[in-house]
Length: 190
Picture (cartoon, rainbow, N blue to C red):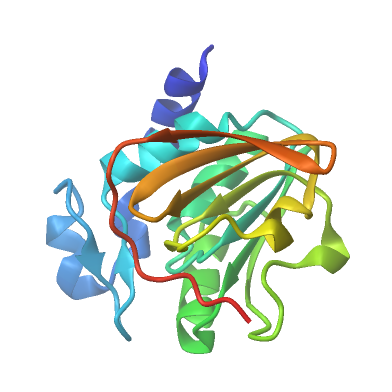
């Protein structure tokens, strides 16, 4: 099964509606970003699918989900890594992190967790390295702090300067491919 098929199956087993406020549940099937609260949004499904296909997550991977918001991407990643893997979702907004963690718990994927991010640290280097990193916030430049949290050969997908970047760590360097035009909330870097 290729990445596109794996992501489609993950999305069919992880309904977006379970990660939306009640007022937005009727809009869950729309391919648009939907408001959560505090200025945060739940990304549009086609963008999430594009990012996850580019990330190419496999069973057993250790994955960091930066900007996890409602926990939907964390739950999708948990389905992709399976019980042999591990997913850590981080969200800077503490209230949103708690709300997202509650929704994530409903999926019964105990190998995934969503926590409030430390505002003084980008990512969670103390628990790395990670095979994959998904970033759902836009940066003006490639954050080398996160690249350094990847395993050698690990992949990060991140919106940078209006484009989606897929970054593969190669030793102390990175190979980057760019695609599409995207808008996200800004990545807050310490």
